[in-house]
Every structure is written in C-alpha cells, then in structure tokens.
Amino acid sequence: MKVQMKVILAMLIGILLIATGCTNNSEDQEKNQQEKKAESKAKFEVVEASSFSVKNIRGIGYPGNDQALYVATNTGLKFNKDSKWYESTTNQHDYIGFQAVKDGFLGSGHPQKGTGFKDPLGVVRSVDQGRTLDQLAFYGKRNFHFMAASFSGEGLYVISETPEDGLSYGVNYSTNNGDTWTKSAFNGFNADSLGMIAVHPSNGDIVAMSTRTGIYYSSDNGNTMKLITNPIMVTALTFSGDTILFSSVENDNILLKTLNPVTGEQGVLAFPFLDYDNPITYLAVNQKDQNQIAFTTYKNDIYQSKDGGKNWSVLLKDGKKEQE
Image 1 (cartoon, helix red, strand yellow):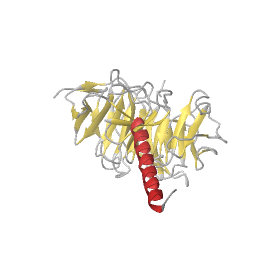
Image 2 (cartoon, rainbow, N blue to C red):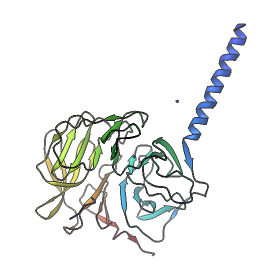
Image 3 (cartoon, rainbow, N blue to C red):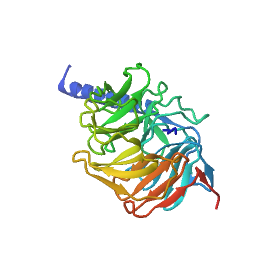
Image 4 (cartoon, one colour):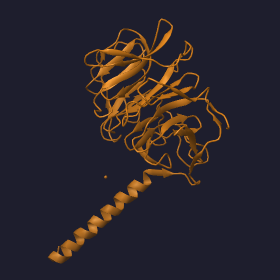
C-alpha cells in the first residue's frame, strides 16, 4: 500500500532631521512590506460552491481567525462552514505543505496559472483566506511537500530535499518566520524515512514525526528524537493541546488514537469504518475548540466531529461535492 502518504546645526534642525529620518525609515519599511506581499490582479471573492471535484487533498486545518475548516486541494482552498462549502473565485493555488495557524494559514506549492504569483511559492502566509500572500521565505525558489508550524506561529519546520538556498538536507526549522534556518540534528532518529511533522500549538520547540515505524518526539526542535510508540505504521498526526492525535495501521485495521507524549498514556477514538486501502492521510484539531476534529483519507473522503469523536459527519466523499 502506498500512502501518500509552509523590519546638526540647531536643536530644531536636529529634531527635523530625526523626524525626517523616521519618516523615511517608515516609508522604506512600508515599501518593503508591500514588496513582500503578493496579490492577484483578478477579483478575489469567497463564494458558495455548488459543486467541485478534487484530485488531491494537500492538508486541512482550522485557522484561528476564521470559523471554517480549510481544505487545501490541487484546485485551491475549499472552506466548509455550517455544513456548506465555499471556494475562492481566483488564487486557486495548489497549496502543498498547508498549515493552519492562529492568524491564518501557511503554505507552499504552486500558484494558479495567470494570477501573477511566482512559481514556486516558497513559504507564504495569508491572513485573509488567500486574498493576499505574505512572502516569508524562498518565494519563487522552493517548494516544500512537508512543512509544519506551531499554531502560535513561533516555530516553522520544512523538509528540504536538496542542500541549497541556506537549507541543509533534511529537517530545518526557523524561529523568526523564515528569516534564518537551522538544521535539526535528529539525534536518536532510527526510522528509514522522514514523515509528516506536527508542531505543538503553543511551544514551537516541541515536534513529533510520523514514520512507518512509529512516532518520534522532540522537545528541542528535533535535535534530539525519541521513539514514543511501538514500531507501528503511523499515517497522520497532529497536536490537540499537549496530546498527540494520530492514526495508525495495525493488523490490517485503521485506528485513531490519542497519546500523551510524556506519560505514554494512550486512548482510542471510535470513527466510521475505513477500508484498509483508504487510510487517514491528514488530521486537524480546532485549537479554539478541541472537540472539533477532522480527517481526510487516501481516497479524498473528509469526516468531521464536533463532539470529540463521539459522532461523525461526512463532508466530502471521493473528493466530490455534488450540485444540490
């Protein structure tokens, strides 16, 4: 099974000079900020979607500045709110490496053709549903399939497949919104491949990674890694407060579990039956209401619970939203 598996002549003259200097600095800062903000020339609106079909789901999440579940797809963002689907009229980018955060979302990937954005996107951030994109790092240079960030925005991680542009091969992290990067040492990591990264919502130093042989956990930006589960295949994970919510495949069964990374205590959540060939690919928890959980599957199904996993509703089946 293949699982598919982002600042002096006189006192009066001196004061005037200082004031003028401040004004110029302010103007320069504003100019720099504008240069780092990309916006489509086409009219941007979020409208109700009567129907759509997606081939690939790239990630899901609950941004802290909105009430909707965001779904990153190969045809742009889809928003689910109050049992209705919405989408944007432009900026339908292929947001690979999608991550919801407190003030919006982060992403990487490729822009919709004709919108004027550079390809690839590097690491960008939006606080307005994708209307504008703040260029954090590597704009027009890099695309990151694996990217994660703390909900608070205090820790940003990418997996670099090549050692260039100031990044080392493997996992790199930034604590200043992508201005500088440091390689995670990954001491103690013995898995045969890298996997999905999850970052603690309020402490960007704490990360977990899913692998084919379990979950590895770190409290120092991935410099020291520790295996905290049995050697099981973990296909998706995220943080719910201090707890890790993850999905594993064990004995041909797809499971949804919780794990306290400090004590090792585990719990099991009930959820609708999934075939062995349709494992969970992405998990999301609303950090403002941790009873709200969503997950996607390999076949592009989306399920959501609003009561901590007691009851589930199907938001999308086979990646299709049919016209009503």
